[in-house]
View 1 (cartoon, rainbow over the protein chains, first blue to last red):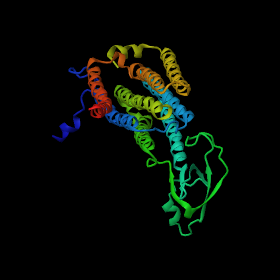
View 2: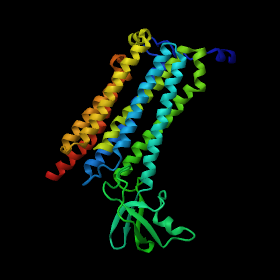
View 3: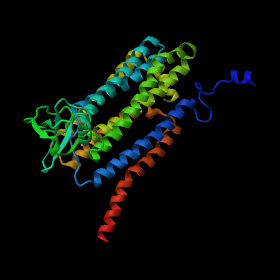
View 4: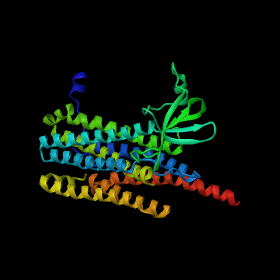
Length: 271
Length: 108
């Protein structure tokens, strides 16, 4: 029985099934992508519901140049992933390595830009004092995700903070970096100090959820594409057709990641 | 990708495939540029949303149709996607239905 099990091979990894006309992985990936459409669809639906129901909606909170850069990075990676698959179709393994490597590097670049954007939001603050005045801007030294409770909990809590209020175009990542004159605010006068995290308002909540989930998909893509570029590529020398199919399926997933971004970019950055 | 497309791709010289994808790349970059330009123009909100999302739709069609080869995909896959599309549109319509319901109660 064990010998029989060892000699068993998974059918239809290369040849199409007679009933579907497709090899298994291709049908599988499309079913998976259909479920992904519903996952992101539910979140987009929530976004519409929240936005339509809001009396006012913050606009232009994010950096359009950085969003555009990331869109271009994903477009380039979508082309390079197709070129990697085409290289295998033409039996050019060297070219495959080149294009697949480029795809992984572009995906890493996307995440780097996203991390920069996230970091910028967690070092950008909203401050409110007892007399009702409020500002948005940066704290001296740009601390990461500081709160009033954390500020006061230190061994030697500061008596005042140095705050650089935004000049114009406040809130935008990579927006105008010039600040109004620095303010020295006594800590005892502060009633609110919070970074622009998901708790800031509904816009930031949906922004972090949608882009966070998308970033997780990018990380998943990097792992899969990276594996096929590295140790997984050994399969090419044993089962070239099966390996080519794997690259095609991984490519379809990667295109879907780009498709989601194509709608995230305008809805969160532009509109 | 369909069998015919696969055969075509396999026999296509690498250079011509590269040239074809260069055009797709240019089209996608152009769509992105148009989207950003439209967003920065002083247009009415409704018009702006409509135009920008239309261009995003065109860009998505290019990716799905050409890069994911949906234009030449098998009927089975297309059927799955059409069914998903129906559920997806229903999901997006839920907020609208909710608004209609609110309006109905408001004018009652």
